[in-house]
Structures are given as C-alpha cells and as structure tokens.
Length: 146
Image (tube, rainbow, N blue to C red; front, side):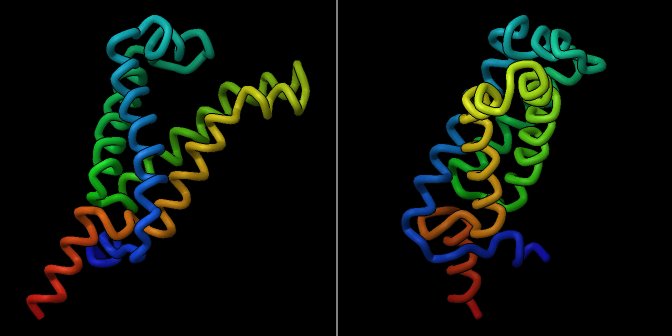
C-alpha cells in the first residue's frame, strides 16, 4: 500500500502544480496562527463552525504539514487527501451562502482560488508528485536495489 501512495508519474511539469498547491496551503496554514482573528478561529466563528479555536489550529496544522509535504514531494498523494477535504468544507461553509444570496457568478468569482486549490489537490492525488520529488527518488532507489 505504501508503494501505491509513493508512486508517481514521471512528469517534470507536475512540480508546477506542487509548488502552487503546497505554497498556498503552507501560507494559509501559517496565517491561521499569525492572524487567528481573521484567518483562523475568528473566521471559523464568523461562519458558524463549532469549536472555532480547536478547528482553527487543527486546520492550520494540517495546511502547514500537508503543504510542506507537497512542496517537497513526499507522500504527496496522502497529503492531498486532507487538503481536498478542507476545500470541500470551505466550499460548503462559505460559498453556498454566496450562491444563495448573490448568485452563481458572484460565487464563481469568490471561489476561484478554492477551485484552483481543490483541483490542484485532486490532480496530485491522481498523478502523484512527479519526477522532481522525494517520492520519485524513493521509488527510483527501491527499484535500483531490487
């Protein structure tokens, strides 16, 4: 099973998606701790999520950890799963109200980064971390030893 999690395609360009997804999630996670009133617990309280103090730290920690793993290309498939869940919850909790109150186009405008992060994470789940990654190095070294 670990072999499947670390497997990756040989693409050199996957690093572009990894850098985008990893950097944004890492940055957003750090900001949840630096600016909790507007990015972390305060934001979660404003949108009505339960236990906002806990959730702010919980989500921020996952964004930092998974963002860093994706940036270096280690366990990228596994790291993308919590980020997909985070983005689906973000859509549900923040964009459904915009859709209901302001319409489709306002929701699409307000969710452009959310879409990029969701689809980038799904891409990494499907394809893996690409040629220039720790996952590719580990798989390559494992094959060389066999």
